[in-house]
Image 1: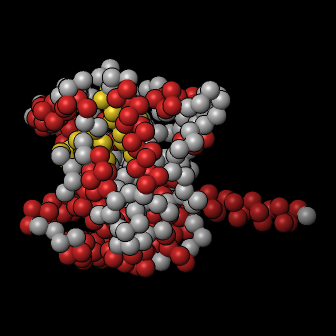
Image 2: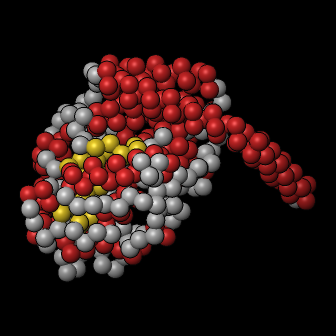
Image 3: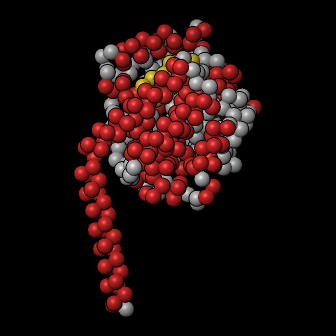
Length: 364
């Protein structure tokens, strides 16, 4: 293994940004040992008897077909038992922001855990690849402690939100809950603490209540500001930023260019063909786009000020917001009629339920 191949590869990206797809592309290559979601709270519960339960087919993931997610962790487990050196949280989301803020080192337990994963992969002659959607606030600490190659994966923010909200509509609130909890436990960072106060997460009992229909626009604004801020800061420490939308829409140009850059950075070719862009149906339409756009632009400017964004970083933010609203306009054009039917169906179901209840009352 040459020095280039000894470099650990970190894949950073928020939830629903195709990070599992990118991880799966590395996993196909025998040169890599690919750890999935290294800070996922389920890892301490994975063992030899249940690891097959954690796979893309176990839920409506829209993930590519693959072996169970945590297969690479099995050799690290004792003969009977579970991973003992995982940095367990008392409450999910409490360590999303490192103590000291997003530019601070990670705690010693987390560093020891990551080092253990890296060392094991190297001992087997593999290049370690570590991914997690919970690392966006940890990029600086990981880069400082482990060096390595850091990849930032981004997706159109409106499409990403629709995926969060679409999963929630289908009964999977995990992603909205994670955002809710990350805000509840925000610490040691002025802008994240500001978003915590602005979002009023402490006033709600659940993420579903916090992002209900009458608060939907507000939750969307917080989601965008949260990710804009973290992406600007993460990009500073990453060696390459990959736009998953462009991978899907520009397979001949952008994809080949990105593959070449990865080869130079990592030492191996990673095949990025087959990227697809999906459209998710969210819970609701944005009720007041003009007001929402004004608030997002205000929060984005503040995020740039708090992070002392350079001119290039400010341009990055402007491009993300322009792309967001362009995608929103396309969605409204094709989605409004469908939502009118959804709303009518909801109203009809509610009316039928009320009528059914009245009939039950009359028969008593």
